[in-house]
Image (cartoon, rainbow, N blue to C red; front, side, top):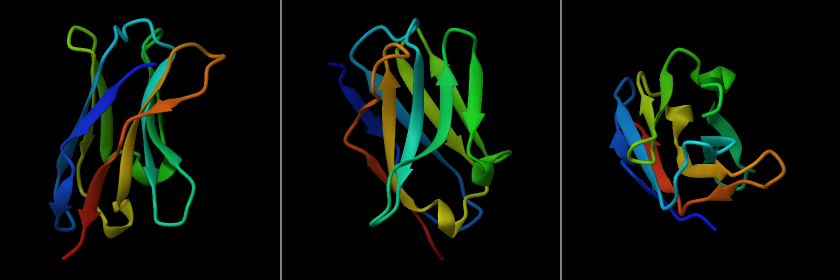
Length: 118
């Protein structure tokens, strides 16, 4: 099992920026995928941004296209999510996620809260 430790959440006004970071306890250079999922109160987790280290492909939820950027520092086993032009609907608990191979389920960190309000 991998340990994923998130940081960087907080409260920000609409239009502001935040960067989330996630440090993994294993070498993630050859992992199948890593990503950020958001969970709103009472809702299921939704993939916000996912990165595939093998071919550097990325996926973004439609609602964050052009505003969020996911990046992966393989030397530090760190996944980041740079969030710009934040909106109140971006509010939620953000989880770092890791999938070792395409056959595995995602493993999640403890989550970090992001709140966007005026």
